[in-house]
Image (tube, rainbow, N blue to C red; front, side):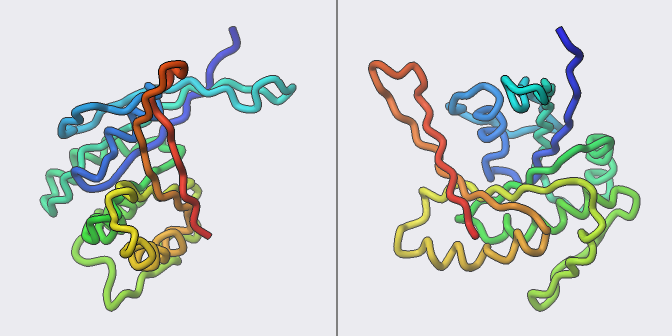
Length: 200
């Protein structure tokens, strides 16, 4: 067996946005029935065969680091979390589409993880402006995932998507809004269907 390349991906966002459920779904391929609060950090692993069946095939050992979502401004929380931010290959920023504050806090999460030496403090966004230059030279790929899309009434979905559309531009990231539906079929052993709504 060939050696596996390790890939470390942080999963960041406020408490209750669905980080643990997302990580469990990605790694275990099943919905997490009763998620609990993550204290500190939880690491789950998925083996991924990149370009399977081709000459460029490579196997990756992907570690998804689900970091506890307390956003407190206490420096002890930030310094404790800083140990998780070393040697990162990617960051998934998760926000709850039904909770405006969780979207706003993504700025703090990203700056805390990417600038672990400078310890950002205070409000990052003022008057809706955000300095995109902070991410211009960022070598770490970012992915934004909005959860709980299915919990937004259909009449409000357009408004919510308009409100969050600027996030991917600010972070120079790709964005996915997620709906997870349980499906129970007698012939299909997989009870989960994952739907991605891509925004352009």
